Image 1 (cartoon, one colour):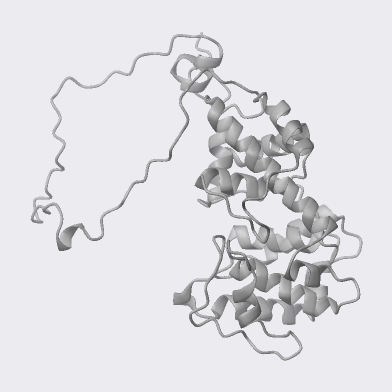
Image 2 (cartoon, one colour; image 1 turned 45 degrees about the horizontal axis):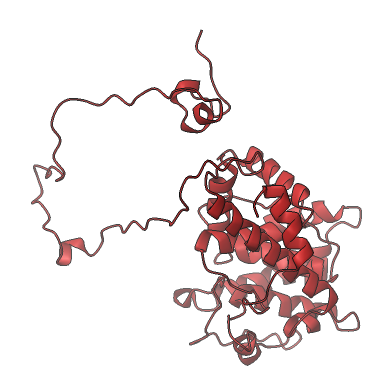
Length: 327
């Protein structure tokens, strides 16, 4: 009787589960017919030559650097087989969690203005949107570009984004101009105000409010990362009662790709469940996985408003490292 694994494959055919259960995987069977590495030309089209004008539209494939397989295994990150990868993930998760602690205790730069409880909520919300949309730079003064282009909500003016420099996680596309910002302003005004748009129904839980706002912010030019960061920031800085119950994974952004790679699954529901279990086991906020996964996938750290060279809090790093069983 054939046995199927959790990935809905025959057990001996699954590279992951056969390894976990010490089952010899079935060898791949390929045709004995010789293959050519050159594509066959279509009978109605001339064959393309390498290089030149015909190669300009070709797809470039970048190979992601991975640590060597050294037998590492953890139920929290079943997709990883390298202690080096797991150790680097622990560092990035701890850094992201430390950043959230800094935002809660002593928010830097424009985050302090967003967090100011005596400030106008509409202006604080507008500023939070501009920060999430354009993105802080990885520079000694990460908010200089946002300071340069910012406008007030009360003025009704759309920022001049010509030659605006976005941070690593920016949603700004110069080809779109200000259309994404205009779409956000229109979304808020249709609700009556930004406060009404974000607050929603007073009976909603913070998790429900986050999810509904995330769905409604699916505006042209506002990608998943910018939406998640905006809502997580507004909640973390106590502008609104917002708290993510899941990472809102989907599409081909870096966070989703990293989650699939580390958590060893592609199914959205199982992916979100494993992400929640990872955050719980590491005793860090779920929101920290967003930046942690992003930096881990890129293999290059962005500080998202704090110094990227900042060392993670020692206790947080120890907790995460213990959960992932890495030194």
